[in-house]
Image (cartoon, rainbow, N blue to C red; front, side):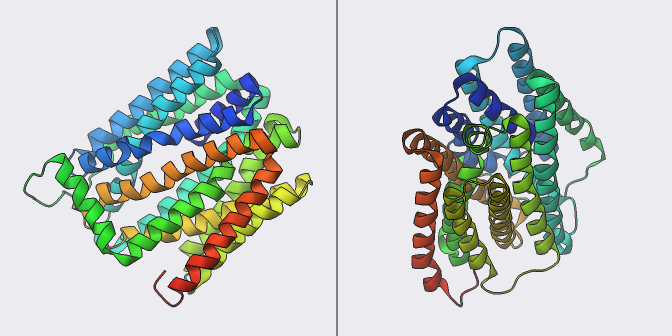
Length: 370
């Protein structure tokens, strides 16, 4: 998944040289979560989850193979990149609730917290390794071969399901799709911790993860480092993410640490905008990767540990909708603004905005569970 996103972002920069278009491609890759994510989440709560996993994985294999074929023949161009990013975004919007529902159902309930932590660690190890390898692949064998490799890496998911035995869903009276969606929304609305988690997720995703979608602009447009530089930047973010996941797995849950990490991440945005050094850029990006992952894993674990299996898909799909949809807003908005005033000025404004909002919100929640 990371290889595909990095490759499409790099192709968008090569085709256009325009940070706004790079932001658009990043945004289109996650924007479908707003519409289709909740629907797929509600369907996952009643569907054959192994069949759903095969369908989403097979869809990604087909789309990546098509993208590789088109890029290797006539070239994707702007229109092709827009179409592919949007189509992959739809498939990913189905894959996320499947992924987040399946893992906890493969183990006894007492082991669900450990599965959540290990899942976050696995995801962020991929976030570390895939961008580095993708950057190297783009610089050596090119985008076409990289897309074929990404397609091949999704293929095993079509076969491993034969060894999986997820816990059966509880028997429930069938509900219309709309009623299932409303049940998930009511759960969040009635749970104070879930409401705070949703709000903080939105803020973090718009600003911190929105910037991380614009790394091709930072790598080439600001520092002239090309595909290899993009690999190092994304690897820096991934390294911070892995450290955060390891910290969470080791039990770092001190009160106030979540707020501190969010403040550090927003401060890193400000520092990134003020810095012109490549080494400092790597360091600030790593800090943002750490802060965003620490917050994301914390908020995901708090929302998911006590969820019944029969509601896990729809509730967590709404959480993903907020997180991924906010990334679309952040990437698109920051990309557009960077095209007008430059990326450094955009990052300074984003950092100031984030710190200001946290200064308003965090004192109100001081001493509470979050």
